Length: 538
Image (cartoon, rainbow, N blue to C red; front, side, top):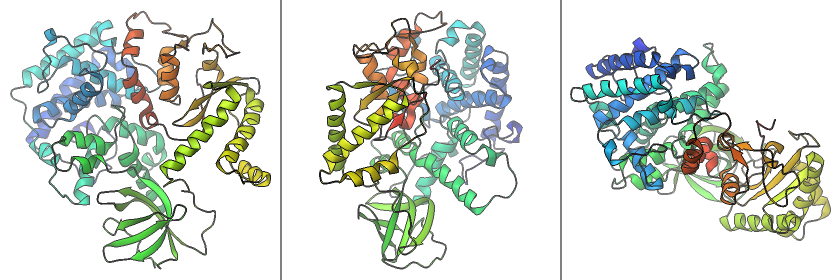
């Protein structure tokens, strides 16, 4: 939500070129005043202990008030989340059991919604820390503060003004143009109350130096910043259910909306090298260098700065998003080269890799791994020397399976191109390689390996246990790995330094939601070799 200068634009720089709010309107003024009342309540409770400076306290106040405005204005940003959560998990909210006595109403404010939003805000701010969702019950001042905020909202419910401008803005007409759709998606990703705190944190971490530098920056840096923003818009998943902005907006519109499937199916941003094959009035026929796949690039939203383009000669390094009717748009960075000056080959070699080829690689990987493990999902190794030896042998067997005619010299050349001598662990460290068919092989470090109660694990220590909260919050651990351990009862876990006997069951009952929350885009595994750095190994 946007507020006037009274709150100093608490969500940071305004990266939007458009937003559905007018400053100093009666609606805006009302919610600014309400935000200040909520902020006062927040500051009088122990909630502030979880925010390291004033801006984050204001974030929480604004999120709670924006939730209230969302309910009043019937914009369905929060109720979309509860509906989807119920469809996925059979209950409206994670953690909190809502009984008939609680009288939960989808079209009104609810106390449990406020509990959840406090948990959500703190959890986004402190990603590596598992915030107990029952904190609100265990700390009287927090419980009292949320009760006061609920009572305040309840007393204002009948007189609070609807934000009709925002409600109208979130609507979408059939066959809307690209610019209109982009504005809606940008609002969801950058400025809606469930996403804005995530976007703000993203830019704090990735582009902190730029945000704090008011000097003139280079054109190249400006383009990089723009590309990062576009990547967030099309590729980044929200902690809530690991959904991208277009997927969430599609659900806000609803399945009955004529544009639902189009919005939901907008692709991620991809980056690749393409040969310009043909120039037409309305677009370009381009061909991916490696796969030879041809796609149609619309001239709308595409600008090559009056550069000379030559058919079958110009090479375009583009960031693209697939729209509808097999039309692609330029979204993000763009570089122009030509065939004669093209060096280093195609960095996007696997961009349009055939699904059958991917399956063939997966089968080959599983076959090779089975030769080392007799069909088990884990291989245990000591230090980087043994891991490097495994990498060399498995790589050669894998490549031979895919390409039987490959020579030893070619194998050596291929391996030298990909080998990594910079191992992030000691040579005497206990390691486990896990077979993940969705993301190839994962290397797990000692702090977790010693807690895996696999009969084949020579490093297992029955006296060691892993804090279940760490298993959730170490987001480099893929969901397949975590689920395999838990489903097969292969991990010794505990809840350290916690008097809440319910917490273990709460985590287990909401495991998939928490895996989505902490992994986001990584929840949907992609094929790549992952070296997992266990930050808590000691």
